[in-house]
Length: 112
Image 1 (cartoon, one colour):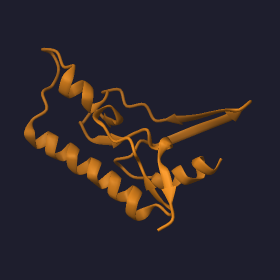
Image 2 (cartoon, one colour):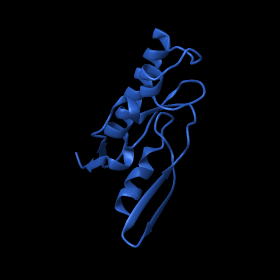
Image 3 (cartoon, helix red, strand yellow):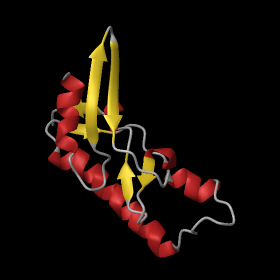
């Protein structure tokens, strides 16, 4: 329950939204919004001939959006959150290729 209340501070356009959780019989599950366009990793490494290419402008926008998400975790959340697992598979893209940092349920919360 402590993790769920900590995650609630993470409301930001570049962070995947927590839509629910379940805690039963020692199992803890977090349910996040679904972003159908996949991860940055898929766009960079698993694209086929029919995929939209990522232009340099789009790549910069993805980097800036991801940086804004990290800034939000560090500066706005109280206690501050440290993601500890930022990688291309944890950056999900929406239909307009805007980044959404995911896997924040594993973040560590620290008082500063």
